[in-house]
Length: 270
Image 1 (cartoon, one colour):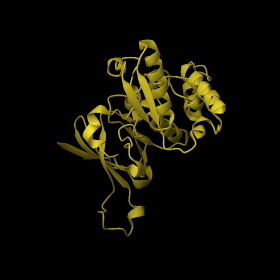
Image 2 (cartoon, rainbow, N blue to C red; image 1 turned 90 degrees about the horizontal axis):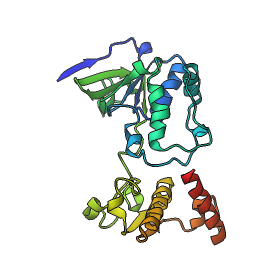
Image 3 (cartoon, rainbow, N blue to C red; image 1 turned 90 degrees about the vertical axis):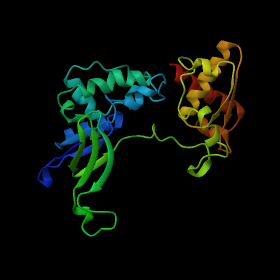
């Protein structure tokens, strides 16, 4: 296994960004705009690896909220054709129309290192028990790359890995619900592609959706549409909130809830 280490004067050390998704690339562009060196380590083979896993999901936020201003300036300078700012992209469209063009820019591409999985972040020369002077030492990032282990020095580290690979359990307090571990093979912790390649697993079935965030909204909407198309199936939606109307912008009455649901359904399909 080959091991190497970047050797720079401390003031010249880069900021290491872990993850080449939307946030990681935005961080790299912001660093470039400030004249700061960046190094982006991505475990996948390309940008937006996690986003590609939910490429079928349409975002609740329109394009105008998804493009970092510094990234927009760089892209525009290279003739980028911006999407309709009021349209809502899917995950696949976010990768294809934003992340890939951004990663190809000459200001960004040299900073990207793919298939580099970070396995440790430490302070150089400090173990867990030594604290005096720790905040003055550079960071050491240990990553496994295609050609072996790399030990990279950095003056700062930005964790942009997201939560996709570490979803919350069903139980409260961050622990699995009773029986969850025993039935983990029947539980999807992400938004399944129920109208696409995973249709066979959900058509005609009774499905429980747990949660009150945007992912739950997407899952419920798609499952309801699947039940309509298949003329069968049932969706049960479980939330912890005592006031369901809070999920719809603070609505309180059933009529307000139904109106809020309709608005969100339309935004999902636009």
